[in-house]
Image 1 (cartoon, rainbow, N blue to C red):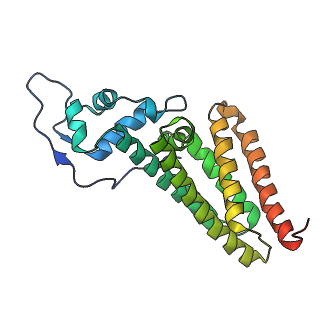
Image 2 (cartoon, rainbow, N blue to C red; image 1 turned 180 degrees about the horizontal axis):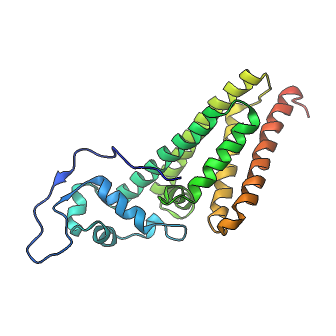
Image 3 (cartoon, rainbow, N blue to C red; image 1 turned 180 degrees about the vertical axis):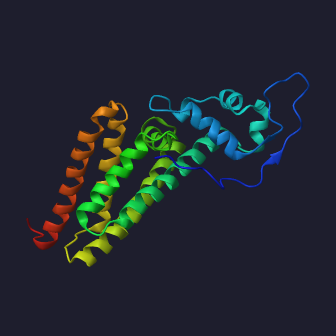
Length: 225
């Protein structure tokens, strides 16, 4: 499964035509062009924090100075990539949860959607998983912000499902945080595994998440347990 990146920026700003004899340079560049170029360079073993401005500009087919028409610096580009990755993944997993009608299918659908994005060509999930551990303080803060968005949306879904299914739920915010942090920590491990292990890894991750869900239901019925 891959995602299409659209509507990321204002109208592309026109740049002066490339000098005669400078092949491959684009006369018009947008934020999306630069973001797409950066996405081609990152991957499971390449962090956004290791990219250089000249490297991204070369991939985008622009002069290095043209980069500054769209981004103040590489930090701003990295934060834009993290924000994009978070929005994309939240939308995909949110749709998987909304389609589910019972607790088990919610867990399975969400985990499967997460793993599909882990192997997607656009590498957006890789950015979230890597920058939260190896990026600059600004990058880590951006990742933390995206994780908090996941937790807020998951908390609302947990409450909705508990009410619909008549099950208990204790500390929904903490339950959502436990699930989110588990999935992202395990996802960082899964990036380095061969794809043929995905099925078993997905099964294990689903069981772990269900343990948390069952635990919060049990505690709601017996808080002293």
